[in-house]
Image (cartoon, rainbow, N blue to C red; front, side, top):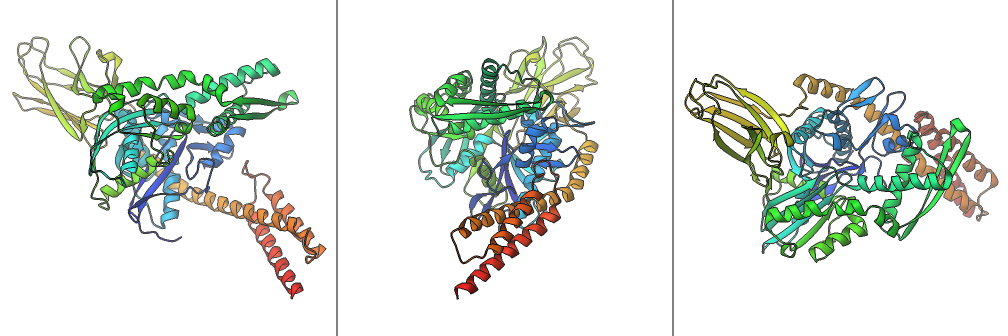
Length: 596
């Protein structure tokens, strides 16, 4: 393990489908490769957690593979449940979204420590711009459980804008639209960029809109095709459904670069004693028609962000696209048509959020001093007043950090108690917005209605997390709380989860060693099979040498058969791999002597 000179703070893109981390090295943001190496998602890895039947925990690509065989013990898309009371049940145990997210963050922490050669304790984590207070706090809790101090939360589109603007000339003011379409969320951020100042002027979005919604449209189409062509209804077969979802996701990715693709799936119905193979050709045009309702939903957040910024599409100088689904031609073409200009091509949409988080980490660590970031709150904040009305104290798109206050009074004579119901949202009635907290201001002196004066103050920190205080201006009595939301975990719960996470460290490191051994074994098999192919054309190698190599390959492959299920003897694989390597080295030496 070689230590690399870098900031002590990593930037993390904790995504719905895939996650990534980056760090500043030599003044540049560098993506930290996942332990799996290059996956179908580049250096990112799937945000998937799985538990084997033996309760071994898998995270990343191995967990995604596990989903096909054991969907009931596999968790994906947990980001959409952050900040809610949702629980994931695996066997007798229930997990909160914070715990599952912490397992993903723990993997990132381990990958980063392996790459950097030093302990990682601090992180900047990105969140969708439209995440509310509950969701932001849940994200920070996940970081704590994983053993990370979350020094800052940063909005994903803002992070992307940092990655975009770091190396650019900033002499003139630019108005930039950053559109972040991920698997689960869609964010639109309008910002002004001038010299070293990044100022967000509006943000809008939809936390339930993304690539997963496109996948659902394709899955529904495939289910209908199965019923029509094969008279099969697999909706109740979880394994078959997982296979179908994986195949449709691959097809969607393929159609970003190809005009058509073939979807081939084998459904083994063991209980029925049959094996049904499905083959279906799908064109890009057909796919685009199927997902049209999802694409149309992009309009509202874009229009809202422009309206809040008091700008028209033609006022935007640069358009930046973020997230895997923005690679799809139908998405890119729609957005370019809307703004009347081509989107920027210089940013990898899958990596820019993590790189932006690393740049923010560099700013906080004092490594970068020429970047200033001013972010905004995505939704209005206020309290419930008489008649169930929502009265905003802070309007959405207010620059943070910030504090604001308003004076309220009683609505009844001799009222001695005031309930302060803190809300977030844009609806006129309190009941239609999100509750962040509720506390009581008691012992108000007896007086006629509208006489007492209670000053309610909101203070938002740089993470977008809210603190609320109330003060009686006559008596100076004061009450303040940190709004933590209904899904707040107790200190005892967080402490217990941190201990559990620590207990898993040895298990995770052992799993890493196993993965490294398997990867090395696969590399040796590839080299040996190439050598076998060359041997048939080379008379300088004796038959015994050829036979030994072939036997070694078969033995190593036999030992790796149970890799997906985890039913393998890793020490035997290591021993067999070393033996095959020795045989090949001997063969090369013997061949060299013969030529001399």
